[in-house]
Length: 442
Image (cartoon, rainbow, N blue to C red; front, top):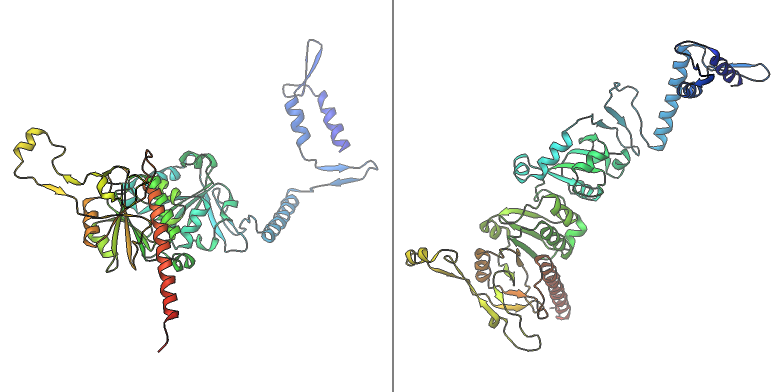
């Protein structure tokens, strides 16, 4: 090394257009760029103080062999540690690499080149409801949501990631046939709806609720309680409602055509994986909803959707909540002008709401098969829902509140009613078991 430094210092006396020494105004100017570059170069040989000389590479062929042996050693070390492993037999592709993670079968991923628009194109497709219905694809973001989808048997189409460590968090045996694309974090951040994206975006084929495999632990704790969402158009509320339904152990959730799409990214984030813990059937007519419910199912509706009700005095006992209803009917001519009302007076009829009795939520209203209809905050429940409630002899359930407080939103109301219904069902089953034990055996 000393000899190398000596040769570098002697090079300063070389003059010419490309020399490192420049003279001007009796000063010596040194080009620091070339000087530092010279120091960074690896030495060809090392001369020790005793005069012994050690040559690092005798020829280019020997240098190639040495580097090849070092590459094999690195592959063996990476194979033991389970880290990234390059394929020796694979073609030298600039954008494709093979690796082995935790002794799983080899996975193959592709590096996105500059200007690759696949991530943006697929994200745009997944965010549009029309394209989702046409292409039958949904977008999932984050490790937990993707793992829940894979555990339920959903079919992944494309997976974008920014670090290989992100793939270690996923079950490798379930993503072998998935197209893996490594992209930059800035690209993920551009197309993600989150402030700090987790670095994982997956495009799945739209799951069929009847074919998903739900967790056995969750299905074993289900109760004969069905949830019907009618005209719920807020994505955040719908996601919270689905999460409450999964936590309360509902058998299934049925969504009418007036609801927001359950596979939008905001609903998926708010639901926290509830789509893959219980069946969620979307875009249903009321005829389809009746077919999805078991026979002899009693349907109830949450109060505060379509009627304007005065707050009852909580201090009074035995008061009937129906006395506080201000308006309890629909009129098909409410939005028409006076002239149109006079002309069509004989042809139109007032559509009165079906007669449904009110009941406090903590009283017994749950039977063997019970369904609960929850309406949106803007339009409330539909007339078809109230007709179904009247047909099955259901009740209009309400939650008493203090005076002067705005009514609860649909998500909170659903949570209160579902957990109360679960409590009543479990108490009823415990009482039936106790009666069966007390009965004398014949």
